[in-house]
Each structure stands twice: as C-alpha cells, then as structure tokens.
Length: 70
Image 1 (tube, rainbow, N blue to C red):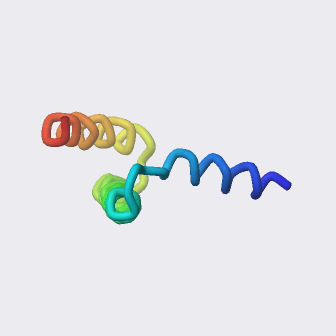
Image 2: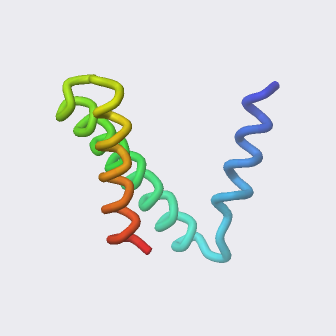
C-alpha cells in the first residue's frame, strides 16, 4: 500500500515537460546520490567513526559543497 504512494510522489516530482529533461533529471539525481554517499563514507572514515568528528567534518563538507553548487 505505502509503496504505491511513494511511487506516485516520485513520479510527480520527477515529471518534466519532455522525455529528455526527465531522463536528464533522473541521471543527475543518481549521480548526486552516489556522490553524496561517497562523501558520507569519506567523512566517516576520515574521522574513524568518532561522532563529534563526524559532526564537525560533515559541517565542513556541507559548507564546501554549498559554496561550489549554488
């Protein structure tokens, strides 16, 4: 039941006026997900899993990311 709701929400959010725009958006979302996962893994392993270090380093990475991607 709940999967149907999420599928509907995903389709509505991913809809674009053309097929090319929809596919391009899909590709960029996938790339962003992979890059975000890699950044999260890098943050975790750089500070060796210490929670305060993860919080501080995540803030640093997020700040750098927001400066690069407006």
